[in-house]
Image (cartoon, rainbow, N blue to C red; front, side, top):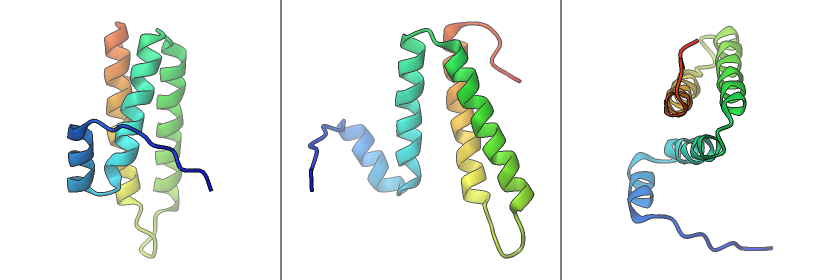
Length: 96
């Protein structure tokens, strides 16, 4: 088994502990978006946004009384906001 030692800023770690597992992907998405913005890769951001929107649509179609995907749907919405913020940082229209 291999263990990696990762340095996490204290603010992120505190936020992670307070809000539970849900913010892990949010932090990861912010890092991904920051990387694409620094590379000026608008197409990758647009593809990422389309992917998250497609996943949300698929979950909405599968949601029933027995399966509640509201937390996942909310997470996809939050991620789309992060992605659109990245698109705005690149300049130009972000909304689709």
